[in-house]
Image (cartoon, rainbow, N blue to C red; front, side, top):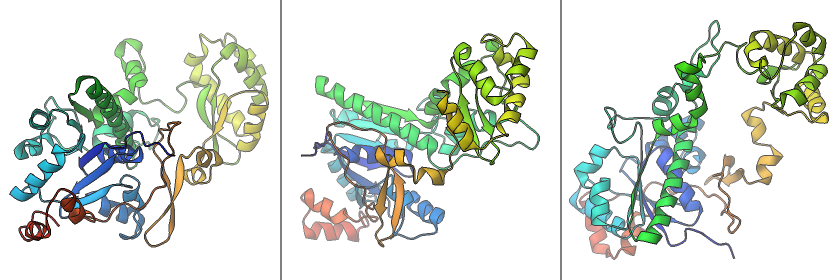
Length: 403
């Protein structure tokens, strides 16, 4: 029998886009019941997903990947009836997941302090752009602005060269990282509730997650350590770097044990005599000689194809990896074998390959992904489950409280 570690846990989600919905999806995968509250226009990510793929509601895997397995209800929480229904949901919930800005939550009485005082066992879990304090606490923030740009990632990670430009952020990477941190915080709060009987307030920001992800780089950026970003193409660690091969593909070499592996690598590359001629290339000095070593290695790597270098390095127990394209990941045997990706059957019968949350427990097997619910698909069913009769449900629709 498949164990669901979060079976019996109820989650109310009031969120849009990727970070918070992605966190709730991970909880859903592990057995939690997730009720997603959407506005009458729905989560904006529904429309974004369709625009990205030029599809429609019957094939929207960009939305599905962060919302599979949930129940969707459409509630106007600005109406008296809609807010009262939301409070009923929260009274029975274990976790409230949201990325709604704090000032909007305060106006509705859905802020962390109010809800945890009213429902002491509730875990209030939120994601924001820049953190809950400071001058930008209430500023809107998205993955590209809060995670990529504010952390320095977009500006300082690309090489600085003629005609270079900041690294363009791709959709959802910072969101997924931040959502994973939110899940970790939620799990910690759940464990603590088992000991104390009390819920807690969990907050993760995209900016804070980026600063943590950039820990090593930020330390190196301390003025006292003298590292200057962005690097030029010939600056950095020569032995842990990307190099283009004869076939136009790229490989990353990662030689860490310098005294043991570097001489062998130099010989394979055919530059061992040049290295000897330079003199005093040691574990202590090689990094600061990058302007000399990187061009030498770059020239040598272009003499053979990526597959040839992969074989030669591996035959000599030297670490190397080919830089695949995203289309290569879709057919990667390693990804399929470990359940990192899966096939989704869309509502129209078409197949899509999409990623899976990377957390694996030995005691349960994740259910196959299904298309996310349509907007408000379970509204009436959830109302009935909370004791609303048909006449009251009709009234709720008539006054614009639900849809």
